[in-house]
Amino acid sequence: MNIIYILWLRQLKRYFRSKARIIGSLAQPLLFLVALGFGFGPIFQKAGGGNYMEFLAPGIISMSILFTAIFAGIEVIWDKQFGFLKETLVAPVSRVQIMFGRTLGGATVATLQGLIVFILSVLIGFEPISLVAVPLSILFMFMIALIFTALGTAIASALDDMQGFQLIMNFLVMPLFFLSGALFPLSGLPPIIKTVASIDPLSYGVDSLRGALTGVYHFGFFLDFAILGALIVIFIWLGSYMFRRIQI
Amino acid sequence: MNIIEAKNLTKKFKDFTAVNNVSFQVQRGEIFAFLGPNGAGKSTTIKMLTTLLLPTSGEITVVGSNPIVEQDKVRKSFGIVFQDPSLDDELTTYENMEYHGVLYRVPKELRIKRIEELLKFVELWERKDDLVKTFSGGMKRRLEIARGLLHHPKVLFLDEPTLGLDPQTRNHIWSYIGRLNKEEGMTIFFTTHYMEEAEKIANTVAIIDHGKIIVQGSPAELKTKTGTNTLEEAFLKFTGTVIREEEAGSADQMRMRHRLWTKK
Image 1 (cartoon, rainbow over the protein chains, first blue to last red):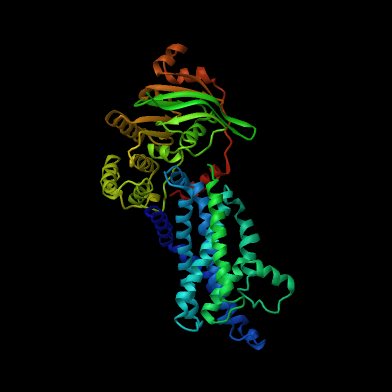
Image 2 (image 1 turned 90 degrees about the vertical axis):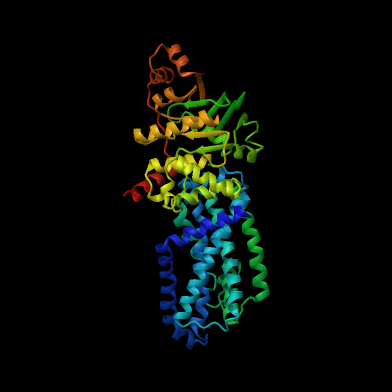
């Protein structure tokens, strides 16, 4: 328990100490909220979609969680490069424990980031249905964060350097975000996009968060919750499996 | 009594044999120098002894346990200072020590006491709340040594502990290590490219080249064998004067870039 705590604490300390990174990573969601939220708002309204800011904010919160979580996982490469991972790997601690502590830490950081974006979005006009929705949405944020931190860890365990990073961003992270229903409603889509969206794990994350904050679910609360729960188990297993295989 | 034993140890990476059928013994309480040109297989051997790499074949024993099957037992028994820095730059001196202490399950009170003792020992106690990224190479090395000792290991592995340090710091570090060996009876297993260091401090020297042990003995024996005056001359007699090429992996390149960025 102590061991998982210290691994968790390390991730949090690193996050709070890199103020530049926190501020830098808030610029993008803010830009999306302002440009897309206010830019597409009128058209969305005219098309009968309702208030676009209400629709968009949960999507952008999910986006910032996705990015932060994947980065937190990918940090394993950084530790590999700069040697700190060796210090952890020669310690008399099981690799699964190490992976677990790191993932919890990374997911906490991503959840915090999601919360900050949530507050920002409220400041520029997003209105959640009630304050009661907030605890449930934090739970969903944490679930999304766990999935993608574990995925990032799994990927990073298999890579030796940051060379493949662009590839991951462009072929995995960006599609996960753009095809998830974070920006557009999933109903009435061409069948291909609809199929892709329904196998995108983030779709369920976005939907759960949107449901919790605005009361409108596409897949439904129980389906979202069950799928996110199952994905957490699968990705943490995958992350542990890949992390255990690291040899330096 | 042998504290480390390697018997017919072999490590192959695809078609390249990094360590080829190597056998050696290290006695409890001795200072053992593991020497060889670049790419001879030193670091690979250390990684196998310290559970970071699985051998392709052969047997190893470290403090009575087998690093392949009894990983945790072996991990508790040694301390290590790696060739490359392995500190978390974003944490303070104290936090780096504490992290290590918790991972090695050193009880809290003992941990607090030992961290203070060790940081004073390597003269970093005044800097305990400073971030490691503000430190010079020598300070980082001293911190790594202190950290490696926190759980009172029976063996201390040092992979080129003095690489890139000025003579003052090198002197300092070897005097710490000498004291540990004398006062605590700690076994020291180290590699270095500075032959005069090995000559001065080691009881036993093993020379490895092309993945094979060429010779093992005291510095005096090696000099007598080759009829030379210094260990460096003896080393060159054994390993030849051809310069070795060592391929830089992507990790090394990345580290270089990191160094360029963070240069003050």
